[in-house]
Image (cartoon, rainbow, N blue to C red; front, side, top):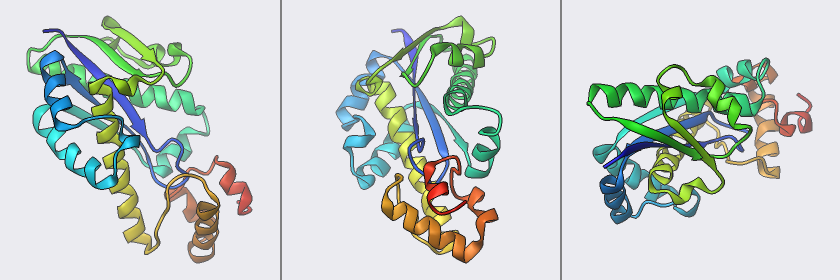
Length: 213
């Protein structure tokens, strides 16, 4: 059966925390196992279920996770827009998975991801191996079991990293970019200063302007 790669990300709409891109290698047989596990779009699952499924996915799939921590993310935004950063992260995941596939004597013919911008961004970011396969970007790609599994791995890693930041700074960092996030961001700056904000948050968000950064 033909193998392919499913890729997705988590954290792009969250002021606090990293940007995480994950991917898995799958085929029809693996997809059936994933469906039996209860895999679906991570946005429809509880955090507890995401953590449980992530462990099971890692047991049955070849996977790759790339984490762009806030400080690195903020450095990248000085020279790249969000879509190009996403393309870079997706490309790294695809290339790394193709290397793992090669080691396991697996041939992947395609990579599927959610559509996040001009597909040329991703094509340009891919290296030699990635340019040999078919690239499919489509809206609601999470309906594919491999992409849904990637979304679960990405979300689980994002939540784990956000928890570590909360423990380090002894503050509860909420998700998203709501009024609660603005409140916590303002409190963070009072406690740790504006300079430290780049270590926990994506400072190009409007949230930064709302707290005077």
